[in-house]
Amino acid sequence: MRNRLNVDILSLGAGAAIAVVGALVLVDSAGGLDLSLGWMAVALTAAVGAILVLSGIPRVPERRDD
Amino acid sequence: MNDTPTTEPPREEPTGEDTTEQEAITGQMPQPRRLTRSSSDRMLAGVAGGLGRYFGVDPVVFRIGFVLSLFFGGLGALAYLLLAVFVPTDGDPDRSQRFGARLQGLGIWRALGLVAIAIVAFFGLSALAALAAFAVGLGWGVPVAIMIIAIGALLAIAAFRGGARWLILPAVALAIGGGVAAASDLDLRGGIGEREYHPVGVGSIPADGYRLGVGRLVVDLRDLNWQKHRALPLKVSLGVGQADVFVPRRVCVTGTTHVGAGESEVVGERNDGVDVNHAPGGSSRATPRLNLDASVDAGQLRVINSNTAEVDHPGFGPGPFHENTAPQRAAEAGACGTG
Image 1: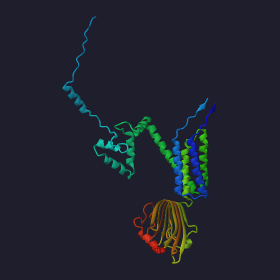
Image 2 (image 1 turned 90 degrees about the vertical axis):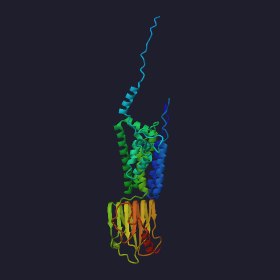
Image 3 (image 1 turned 90 degrees about the horizontal axis):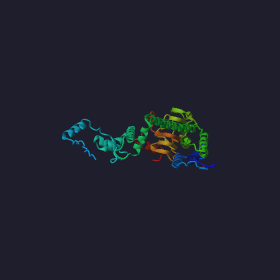
Image 4 (image 1 turned 45 degrees about the vertical axis):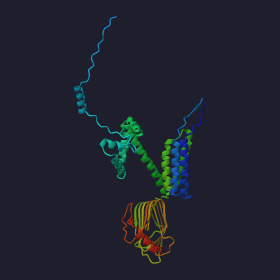
């Protein structure tokens, strides 16, 4: 018996989106980039929007191959 | 066969007297009028239509009342929501009615508990975002960013082990707070409170200018001896709040000003929004001149060239010259020779 790989798409996508925002904060705080509030607002809105879209995808139930 | 005739009792026909009696009973106990939402006369949920029908008033009156209430605390909007959820429609149950039925099915205490949890969660997430912004403002931007990335990575890894959806909202709150604070260059290292400076000599002005983290910062330069050929560089920096710089009318103001989010009113030029920049005076070399480098991360910046403006004008909102900024602009143009 082997369980099929069951990935929670919402957690994966949200993690990626949040990590990208964190990277932007890191680059801005370290002085590598002077991001304006307007562009950060765009990035945050895109991240939240992506999470909302992913939350609309139904979770695939775990399937066992007996 | 013995047929026994069956006889049915004679059916009693209603008499006129009985009918009158029933009507009398009905008349004594009239059916109560029921408040329902209108399914035909509706703009949103039919609340105003139902109220209008119930009270015999044009529903437009209630609609105007609900809209007006938005400008007076919004209590009417809350009332509308409650009525939409708990008052049934006169037609097929709609979504809000089904939601209300579900709430009623939960029982009052469980429903109140859910509302309380939602309120606590909202304020908890807001506090988390504020904490992240505060940390970034204190100069801990890099550690906060690393923490946000780590939480994102944790979420991604957890996705392969069933997921950790409960972590998404706190992570989003942290990302929003940290992101907004980093992008607006929030600097809270100057302290908190109200600072008012009236330098009388150039020597008493700090070399690195005036700085405040959160609060109101007033720099009144009208007591300075503005000699004819003086060009004074000045840096003013505020994290969150209101910064006011006062100069005499005859001083030309040049340099750059920046407001991350809020309102800027610089020698009569007023703008608001996000990333509001000004470059007053252009490239004027006129003297006496204030070469200003001012920034407010979030809030209001006012540079007022007036000999009579009151310093004691705290709080947000219209400045002393909000209605008519023409005299300030004219004074600036005259002082800088750009008029």
